[in-house]
Image (cartoon, rainbow, N blue to C red; front, side):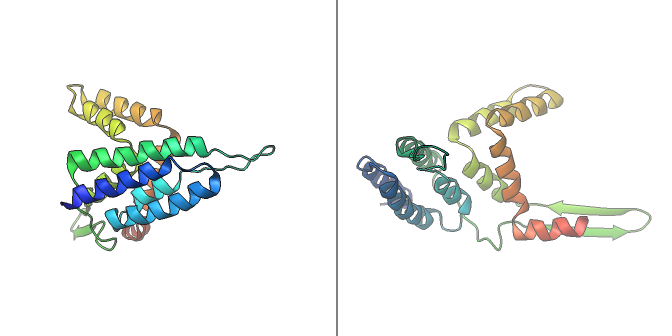
Length: 191
C-alpha cells in the first residue's frame, strides 16, 4: 500500500468515527486523535493541522451553551474530504523541514546603486495556500491566473476572489508567511 493510500484510509477511518459523535466532549476527543493522525500524515505541515484544529464544537455565548457539534462535524467532514481529494489529485506534498521552509538569499552590490535580491522558496507559499484554501477555491484562483485577461484586470479579479473567501483567509495567509522565523528575521533587516 502506498503512503497516499495509507493516508486516505486513515482519514476515512476518522471520518467514519465522526458519525458516532454526539456532543462537544466527544468531538474534542475525536479532534485530538484526528489531529495526531494528520500530524503523522503531514509531518511538519502545521498549516493543515492548525486549520483542522480551528474547527470549534462549542463557542462562548451570553445565553445558552454555545454547542455547535453538528456544524463542527460538517466542517470536519468537508475539510478532511478536501484533504483526501488533494491527496488523490496531487499525492502527498513534499514536505520540507521548518528550518528549510523558506530560503531567502540577499545579495547586495555596492557601486553607485544598491540592489537587493530576495528569493523565496515558493513551495512554502504553495503549502500555505493549500492549507488555507479549499480545493475548489484553489481551482477558482487557477482559472483566473490561466485566463486571457490583461494583467491589471487579472490582478483585480484575483484580489476580488480572495476577498470573497473571507477576510480571515487573506489575513491567515499573510500571518503564516510573516511569522515564519526566517521571513520575520529578514523582514526586520529590511525595515
